[in-house]
Amino acid sequence: MPSICHYYVTLRCNDTCEFCPHWTVLENQYARAGEELGTKELGAREMEGKLKEIRAKGVKTLNITGGEPLLRDDLPELLKLAKALGFCVELTTNGILYGEKGRLLNGLTDRLFFSLDYPVAAEHDRSRGVECFHAVMAALELAKTAGEQPLLACTLHRDNIRFLPELAELAEKRQVKVQLNPVNDFNGTQGFEPATVEAVKYYARRKHVLVNHALLEFVRQGGNRVYWPRCRAAETTVTLLPDGTTVAPCFDNRSGRSGRADICSSCMRGPYMLPSFAIGLDKYFWLNLWSEWLTRRKTR
Image 1: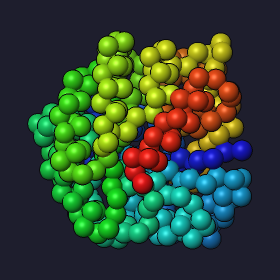
Image 2: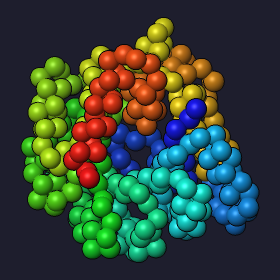
Image 3: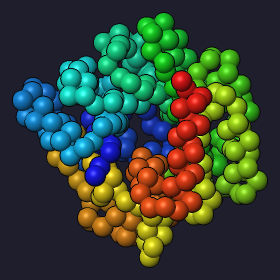
Image 4: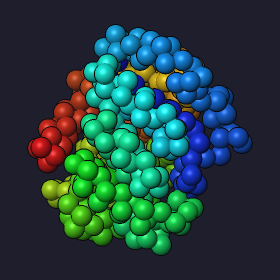
């Protein structure tokens, strides 16, 4: 039974992140996802029907992602609909538009993440391709003032891993939790030597730093193996595209075979692997369970 729906509400983005292919939508395979359909084009009833269908499958969490979700003008309506249907709503934004649109989202998300690649303005802005570090910091304070409990989401790769001390200090100073997520691309984690993994574990002991140890171990082991796949995306997730259609088993693999397509080799995509770890009694199951307990303990 699926537990989470990854809803790619748009593939448009106002960032040009060095590790993300979505912003080149017109030049690569992601163009297959089609144009986004808002509640006006698709129809509010049809949109409600799609979300009801997903909810009826047992899905409890709706992960709003993209692209940059705040580029959708009808995002508040989508979130209101999701909350009315009883979803636990997660949303990740780069923060650029939060100052303009944040008040429209108040109370409509259960977990609100702001992306931060580096704790240093110059490095973060270089990585994102636009000046946005200070926008993220302002968005954090605005969200807290509005009564939200925002979190930082940092995509770890072999370059920004060296800024872990400063990142932990920034989270403590700002009194927010930072979730460390290894980059999806195996090439981005080739610098994750055993000592690097131990360093991540060390900083994960801090109150304001969150890490899923199952995913970290999965990265250390080199990710998914197509001849003995750990991915269970087809069983645990639903993926909804901007045009209102669903694909399986995941956004990047639409062959219908979880973990066995060529693109699945060395895959370590957290949004799909973490739900997969909830199935099968192995070390990843127990590490994931332990990590969830630690996260609840730190965030309550």
